[in-house]
Length: 160
Image 1: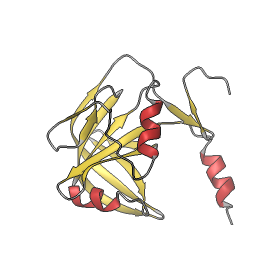
Image 2: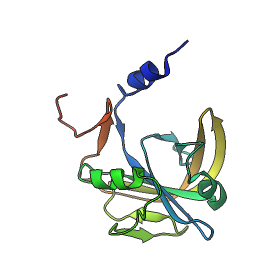
Image 3: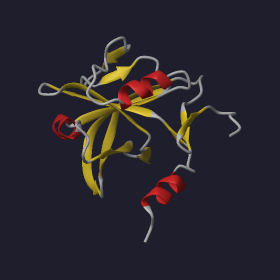
Protein backbone atom coordinates (compact mmCIF):
# COMPACT_ATOMS: atom_id res chain seq x y z
CA UNK A 1 0.00 0.00 0.00
CA UNK A 2 1.31 3.45 -0.93
CA UNK A 3 1.16 6.00 1.88
CA UNK A 4 -0.63 9.12 0.54
CA UNK A 5 1.71 11.53 2.33
CA UNK A 6 4.84 9.78 1.04
CA UNK A 7 3.33 9.63 -2.46
CA UNK A 8 2.71 13.39 -2.38
CA UNK A 9 6.30 14.03 -1.20
CA UNK A 10 7.70 11.82 -3.96
CA UNK A 11 5.60 13.63 -6.58
CA UNK A 12 6.96 16.92 -5.22
CA UNK A 13 10.39 15.86 -6.48
CA UNK A 14 9.15 16.63 -9.99
CA UNK A 15 9.50 20.38 -10.59
CA UNK A 16 6.51 21.88 -12.39
CA UNK A 17 5.55 25.19 -13.85
CA UNK A 18 2.53 26.97 -12.46
CA UNK A 19 -0.50 27.97 -14.48
CA UNK A 20 -3.74 29.79 -13.98
CA UNK A 21 -6.52 27.93 -15.80
CA UNK A 22 -9.55 30.04 -16.67
CA UNK A 23 -12.99 29.60 -18.13
CA UNK A 24 -16.12 31.71 -18.52
CA UNK A 25 -19.79 31.04 -18.92
CA UNK A 26 -23.04 32.98 -18.64
CA UNK A 27 -24.00 31.01 -15.51
CA UNK A 28 -20.68 31.14 -13.66
CA UNK A 29 -18.99 34.27 -14.97
CA UNK A 30 -15.19 34.29 -15.07
CA UNK A 31 -13.44 31.46 -13.21
CA UNK A 32 -9.72 31.07 -12.53
CA UNK A 33 -7.76 28.42 -10.63
CA UNK A 34 -4.08 27.81 -9.98
CA UNK A 35 -2.85 24.47 -11.33
CA UNK A 36 0.50 22.82 -11.81
CA UNK A 37 -1.05 19.79 -13.51
CA UNK A 38 -0.55 21.01 -17.09
CA UNK A 39 0.90 18.94 -19.92
CA UNK A 40 1.18 18.92 -23.65
CA UNK A 41 -0.57 15.91 -25.19
CA UNK A 42 -0.18 16.20 -28.96
CA UNK A 43 1.36 18.50 -31.56
CA UNK A 44 -0.98 17.38 -34.35
CA UNK A 45 -3.68 18.17 -33.45
CA UNK A 46 -2.47 20.66 -30.81
CA UNK A 47 -3.78 19.23 -27.52
CA UNK A 48 -3.01 20.08 -23.89
CA UNK A 49 -4.43 18.87 -20.57
CA UNK A 50 -4.88 19.92 -16.98
CA UNK A 51 -6.44 18.09 -14.08
CA UNK A 52 -8.91 19.46 -11.55
CA UNK A 53 -9.89 18.09 -8.14
CA UNK A 54 -13.40 16.62 -8.38
CA UNK A 55 -14.37 18.53 -5.22
CA UNK A 56 -13.37 21.93 -6.63
CA UNK A 57 -16.06 24.59 -6.61
CA UNK A 58 -15.24 25.36 -10.26
CA UNK A 59 -15.89 21.84 -11.67
CA UNK A 60 -19.42 22.61 -12.93
CA UNK A 61 -18.22 25.77 -14.68
CA UNK A 62 -15.42 23.93 -16.51
CA UNK A 63 -17.87 21.16 -17.47
CA UNK A 64 -20.50 23.54 -18.82
CA UNK A 65 -18.31 26.08 -20.59
CA UNK A 66 -16.80 23.73 -23.18
CA UNK A 67 -13.59 25.77 -23.30
CA UNK A 68 -10.73 26.88 -21.10
CA UNK A 69 -7.46 28.80 -21.23
CA UNK A 70 -4.10 27.92 -19.73
CA UNK A 71 -1.90 30.83 -18.62
CA UNK A 72 1.72 29.86 -17.83
CA UNK A 73 3.03 32.14 -15.08
CA UNK A 74 6.43 33.84 -15.19
CA UNK A 75 8.67 34.06 -12.16
CA UNK A 76 7.39 37.47 -11.05
CA UNK A 77 3.72 36.35 -10.98
CA UNK A 78 3.75 34.41 -7.72
CA UNK A 79 1.05 36.77 -6.42
CA UNK A 80 -1.28 35.59 -9.22
CA UNK A 81 -0.64 31.97 -8.29
CA UNK A 82 -1.63 32.75 -4.71
CA UNK A 83 -4.73 34.77 -5.67
CA UNK A 84 -6.10 32.04 -7.94
CA UNK A 85 -5.30 29.31 -5.38
CA UNK A 86 -7.59 31.00 -2.83
CA UNK A 87 -11.19 29.79 -2.88
CA UNK A 88 -14.26 31.99 -3.01
CA UNK A 89 -12.71 35.45 -3.27
CA UNK A 90 -13.05 38.05 -6.04
CA UNK A 91 -9.98 36.96 -7.95
CA UNK A 92 -10.24 39.46 -10.80
CA UNK A 93 -9.83 42.67 -8.81
CA UNK A 94 -6.60 44.40 -9.98
CA UNK A 95 -5.69 41.51 -12.33
CA UNK A 96 -4.78 42.51 -15.88
CA UNK A 97 -6.46 40.29 -18.46
CA UNK A 98 -7.95 40.33 -21.92
CA UNK A 99 -10.63 38.26 -23.64
CA UNK A 100 -10.06 36.28 -26.82
CA UNK A 101 -12.51 34.25 -28.90
CA UNK A 102 -14.12 32.10 -26.17
CA UNK A 103 -14.33 34.78 -23.48
CA UNK A 104 -11.90 32.94 -21.19
CA UNK A 105 -9.69 35.44 -19.39
CA UNK A 106 -6.13 35.56 -20.74
CA UNK A 107 -3.64 36.96 -18.24
CA UNK A 108 -1.95 39.85 -19.99
CA UNK A 109 1.66 39.24 -18.97
CA UNK A 110 1.68 35.43 -18.79
CA UNK A 111 4.74 33.65 -20.18
CA UNK A 112 2.42 31.72 -22.51
CA UNK A 113 -1.35 31.43 -22.98
CA UNK A 114 -3.39 28.75 -24.73
CA UNK A 115 -7.09 29.12 -25.52
CA UNK A 116 -8.71 25.69 -25.89
CA UNK A 117 -11.94 23.94 -26.81
CA UNK A 118 -12.63 21.05 -24.43
CA UNK A 119 -12.24 17.78 -26.38
CA UNK A 120 -12.41 15.17 -23.60
CA UNK A 121 -12.98 14.93 -19.87
CA UNK A 122 -11.54 11.76 -18.33
CA UNK A 123 -11.90 10.12 -14.94
CA UNK A 124 -8.63 10.57 -13.08
CA UNK A 125 -9.45 9.16 -9.65
CA UNK A 126 -9.95 12.09 -7.29
CA UNK A 127 -9.37 14.46 -10.25
CA UNK A 128 -10.93 15.07 -13.65
CA UNK A 129 -8.59 15.33 -16.63
CA UNK A 130 -9.58 18.01 -19.15
CA UNK A 131 -8.06 17.69 -22.62
CA UNK A 132 -8.39 20.73 -24.86
CA UNK A 133 -7.62 21.51 -28.47
CA UNK A 134 -5.60 24.72 -28.72
CA UNK A 135 -7.31 27.23 -31.01
CA UNK A 136 -5.19 30.30 -30.23
CA UNK A 137 -1.97 30.92 -28.33
CA UNK A 138 0.63 33.51 -27.47
CA UNK A 139 4.03 33.24 -25.85
CA UNK A 140 6.94 35.50 -24.94
CA UNK A 141 10.41 34.37 -25.97
CA UNK A 142 11.95 36.19 -23.00
CA UNK A 143 11.27 35.52 -19.32
CA UNK A 144 11.57 32.69 -16.83
CA UNK A 145 8.85 30.41 -15.44
CA UNK A 146 7.49 30.33 -11.92
CA UNK A 147 8.33 26.85 -10.61
CA UNK A 148 7.02 24.64 -7.83
CA UNK A 149 9.32 22.04 -6.26
CA UNK A 150 9.08 20.10 -2.98
CA UNK A 151 6.22 22.19 -1.66
CA UNK A 152 7.67 25.63 -2.39
CA UNK A 153 7.91 28.23 -5.12
CA UNK A 154 11.24 28.24 -6.93
CA UNK A 155 13.07 30.13 -9.63
CA UNK A 156 15.53 28.81 -12.15
CA UNK A 157 18.92 28.92 -10.48
CA UNK A 158 17.67 28.39 -6.92
CA UNK A 159 19.91 26.02 -4.96
CA UNK A 160 17.63 24.20 -2.50
